[in-house]
Length: 457
Ligand code: HEM
Image (cartoon, rainbow, N blue to C red; front, top):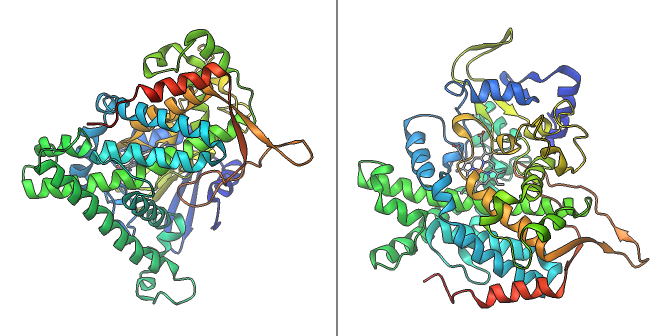
């Protein structure tokens, strides 16, 4: 088993052995899928038997829960809050935070990474709980740390803990036993994450001061989660905690990929923005009339994957697929990175080429049907995430040129396309220049900031 950037090795295995590769690690079968058709046939069309998760010792999150009645209740609550219609109902929050982001980029563009992190955190905490974040916010820091612990828990190497149950009893200081620490820290962080922001939100709710949010919506419709009010409250608490543990970082990573890609690709979309939108910032109302921007969003989700190996599924019944036997209990890994770089489907897969999605004659699979996973476990936050990414892409391109940094020798520095390892991946920090396109672009941002209401109240 590779120990880092597993998706690249698995992709090579796919090229060498075919789209469905079975490996066995200490008696545990793992199926690695490198083809869109195979992943869709198995994980979408047969999702009744491919929706379990490998037992992960650190499953403090619905996304890692086994498939069953408890999981389904959590999932129902989540879906209720983030179906397409409900997700669109939060666009005013994304719009406001995005305008503040543009202002920060205007003032201090080199800290774009930090600004984006604040923006995605603010969006998620406001949508999740109606909580307005402050500078260096404690809840946001806890959410980030919990997310880190969660992604470590779900890496393929982490399942080895299940394969060798004795490892659970190995003390933390034992060489190679760092997972123990992650498990303990993860549990502590997740407790803090579940309890403190929730207690704050419940107080606001009881005092009649809660702002519209996923939390408030569920508190007013508790029966969606469970007929038993105490269980419903527990599910709402978990759902909100999962949301801010998973939401902010994923949106951040996909937006960073867009920025990195802009250093490789010409800004053709700006012509479309000028022609269609003209003398103002683009808004969600322009979405239908901006096919090139929509294509950039798709290509950003395809070019590099936020969760390159997806989250593993597990089969619950024996199955036969195209003559191959897949026994119950097999861990299914859809190599989403590999599938998105399948040259049979996406020509020149390593190029950033939004135009590939403009050809209506032979449409390609929509990358959102890969990047957000499969079947019953498909990412329930996908509409919200796509809305955020779309607005960042459209307004940043309307307002700024995103260019490579310039070195001491006067030459442009094209950063390497390097990503972190782990379940969730993002570009390693890279320098770039984000400069206003024109005086008018600066005015649009300033006017938008000036017309924002003081707060959400
Ligand atoms: C670009 C952003 C995002 C990407 C690429 C992404 C991707 C994914 C993927 C690949 C999965 C696993 C699906 C599977 O098992 O097949 C997943 C699950 C999940 N995502 Fe996302 N996600 C994103 C944003 C979000 C946001 C914003 C939220 C919260 C509002 C969210 C909440 C979840 C949850 C709760 C699960 C677990 C679902 C389950 O096990 O039933 N995600 N996501």
